[in-house]
Length: 191
Length: 144
Image (tube, rainbow over all chains, first blue to last red; front, side, top):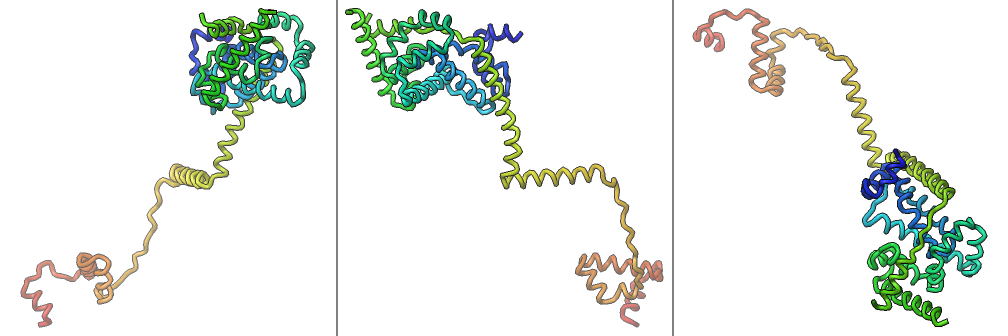
């Protein structure tokens, strides 16, 4: 019964009802929310961090923190937008921590290869490797805005509110990020 | 198509499609359920904590308890109290019609109370005739 409900979650259960049930301590509702968004959020975290194990930790922490808000959680926008913002914030914190520890991108990638499941790693690399590699050469703040806008479908206004920056900053980061991406791709073509 | 749109389209199409592993699903859900239980427990205890900390809530709780005790006392207490026996102190009609008694009666209930006291004294005396003529009454009051 629970499995069939999870399978039809997109069709039958409205997001607000899910949140309402979650606020009343329903574990089924929490499980449905997790099943609905986990892959999308993991993809976002991997694109931002380029490290699967770190990305999994971020998604784990986001859901544990989210579960802790039961009874008092208030949703003003879309749940996907809220969770994406949480993942982006968590990824930024991890990225800062990684930078402080002087772990370069290469070291992080090496850590990824060692810690993750090799089969999953190969599949993920094939599916998302190109973009992840290209975005890895873009400044983190610009990458964050690009991914939140183009992958998570968040508007600039929502991103600005979520990150606590002005909409002009968001737009300029987005524009500079795309320019950087284009120049990287052009340089690859000319080579 | 503009170059910017090309890039945007490329990024959209290259969105990574990854799936979470069974182990991470299990770990995340278990930890999330534990966090949820913890929060529910904390919310329940915090309701009691609010009552214990807040002065207004303390007073309200005390009022509710007193009200409840009162209602219980009414519900399960003696249904009808026996009227306490009051001893009627026998007074003589002379005492009842003294200046002090009449004065007290007047203060208590006005002229009606004086009238009632007088009637009571006369009933105790039982000596008034059934029919009194005006002449006899005037003669009695004038001392003639």
